[in-house]
Image (spheres, rainbow, N blue to C red):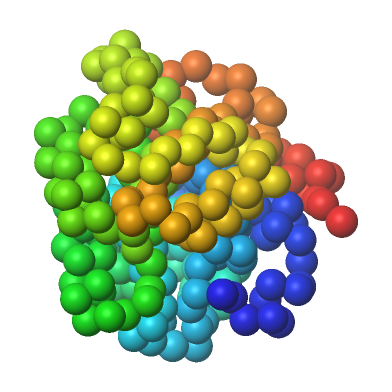
Length: 281
């Protein structure tokens, strides 16, 4: 698991708060970014990096590390925020977000960024890559887990279900999929574009162990991660996380059609002030 100096430092709520704040600071640099998704997924990332995963911040390529695959490349601002909080990326690079020659491009690219395991700009491919990695690790007898974060929009993709079927067939019990269900994609509500419910039943039918939780409830997430890691049943695991877009900044939460949330210059400062006023103990 994460080394003691990280685990026993700030609470998971404080880690999630810091991830949110890092993301807003990066968004302010460019005046844009998928900030609603970053704010919504911060609790999941905090539990992943500061409770669930095994890694060495000083050695991002350590062979025994758990791999976190960001299938949703446009969520890169969220993952960078977590990698900065975890000490994998230096904090002083935050201000370079989206700039020329930055290691933090707006869409995540594995060739640029330590801790970014895959290039996820082509949506719907992450789970297929995760299946290949998980199968490879099992054949090498490497005990590491593969975590794959994908979106509810990506379950529209046939490749996702081909990968899900393959994972069930190979009994990949070292694979944990995390599905961010915020019911929003580029053209509107995800369920209105192509209704994916009942989502839990679909994953179960493909041979996965399924949990569905409030993705902004840290204790519920901790329990789900514990179950996923410690399950004795030889099957892949999925945690479906229902999240609130722009979680933690109420005036942004209230906006409609917020797949790509437009934030005015003064609103970045307002969002930071709200976060600073609600910092957990």
